[in-house]
Amino acid sequence: MRIDFLGFPIDSLDMQETLRRVDEFVETGEPHLILVANANKLWIRRRDPQMERIALQADLVVPERVVVLGAAFLGAPLKSDVCGVALAKELLPHCEKAGHRIFFLGARPAVLETMLRKIRSEYPALQIAGYNDGYFLKNGKEELLKKLRAAKPDVLLVAMGSPLQEYWIRDNCLELGIPVALGVGGSFDVIAGIKADAPLWVRKCSIEWLFRFIQDPKNLWKRYSITIPWLLGSILAEKIRGRKPRVLETDLRN
Image 1 (cartoon, helix red, strand yellow):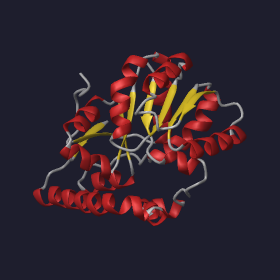
Image 2 (image 1 turned 120 degrees about the vertical axis):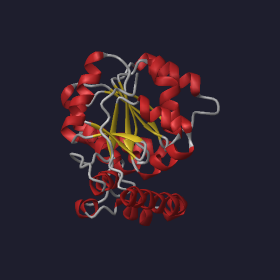
Image 3 (image 1 turned 30 degrees about the horizontal axis):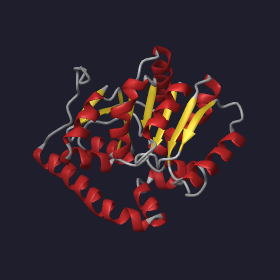
Image 4 (image 1 turned 90 degrees about the horizontal axis):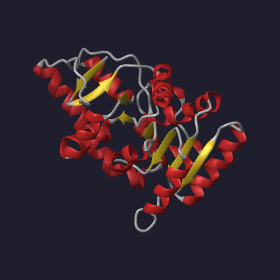
């Protein structure tokens, strides 16, 4: 099931169903985009027609916890939250077991190297198709595209932050034909162990944003001071108006 939540398409599924969809996408060999919906992306979508179009064209849009709670509050419960960091972490053992070849794109070189050492130690059978840091836009784009064409990964994780990672995937992954492309924001820092992942009790209390803010207030204070109040206000306004998220019965990608 897919619903319209504040003008953003959201799919109702849990982590295991998401991983099965990844397998299906890889099986087809055709390019697919998975989008993680959170407060920041919803806020960007309201101000950026490009993000709106990307959301409508995505093959799968998975919700973070705050979106699940908001949808339930408005009378449209979703199966589960699928956090971007959690999905990125789950994809590692899943791709190792399924034999999917994975490419890592983004983050600083030191973060990428630390993450790769950890991944190779914990998932020795994982097929790493390739990797590249996120500092290629000025003069290394063509070299990166050449590397990706040669690598032919099944899954591409892009950690460049929103909306840049979504723009890059939109502009390049259709031509590259990568079966699964997913923007994962700051997940590489968490996988590398440089930043701590939110404990289970924090996720259950829906304060992951606060946990992340405490770790990186300098870079996150402005975003959270805007997006969190905006999202809460938007949800409350919908509730007051009596608007329930509608089920989308048509395929918006056509």
